[in-house]
Length: 143
Ligand SMILES: [Zn+2]
View 1 (cartoon, helix red, strand yellow):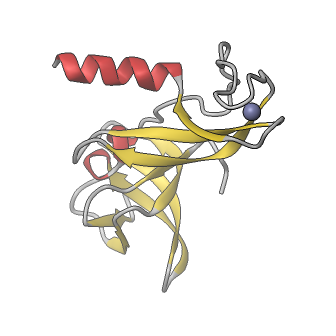
View 2: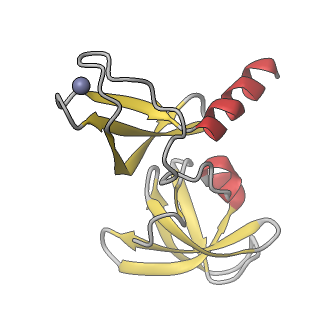
């Protein structure tokens, strides 16, 4: 998968359609949590490519309501954190940031991207979220 253009489906079943309208032919149905690669974006629909367990690689159009964060990417995940704190265990400031992230669902529609940092001195693993995701969470809790 392409990395940063990947987002997950949040509906129980997400219909992939041949064209960007709700009446277009259904090409495939994706289970919740399928990672889809965003190819292009329309107003209500997003063009995606995904791996289907039976049909293999499928592509088509998916309504934004079925995608985490409405089909918009949440955070720039690979940006190094400017101010990582010292390691709790050994005080080192040398961290390795894992390029792989996962999503934690905060509610039915809200997800936050989490990744890990590993202390290069003692091996302590910590989970963290990016500053932008944190800002999003603050805005959600105000709403
Ligand atoms: Zn350490």
